[in-house]
Image (cartoon, rainbow, N blue to C red; front, side, top):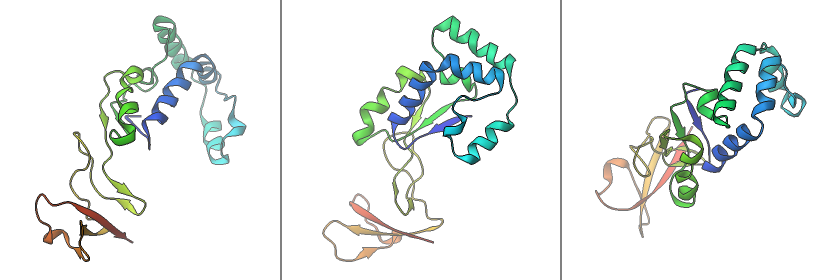
Length: 168
């Protein structure tokens, strides 16, 4: 796992909290190749987890890290983890800023603007938005106070628009 993507920063906080609270049980399960709460998961997940072999060597590595630090971190479990992706502005700003308490120096990337119909922009490292995603979407823009939409080629630089998205 190289990235964790969530619809809200609180989801990542809950993941880190459960990882810390249930570290010993998770490590025991990994070492034994069994999962305590298997029956609570969807059938497709149950089948995949049943296929996983016991991994006592990895379990011992994780137990040593837990004993050394007193906590099990996401980066301990997934050494390749290099990015968190979740909303970082608006109502999510405060929670996103607190992710460093649980995930250290991992960068947190805002996923870009989206609507129910689909994504509108690519991710940008700074602030909201990014370049417009045109593939698979037909995007028109409604200027503030306007009664007709405009195509992307008809936009005025610096003006404010509401995106109208249609896709197949």
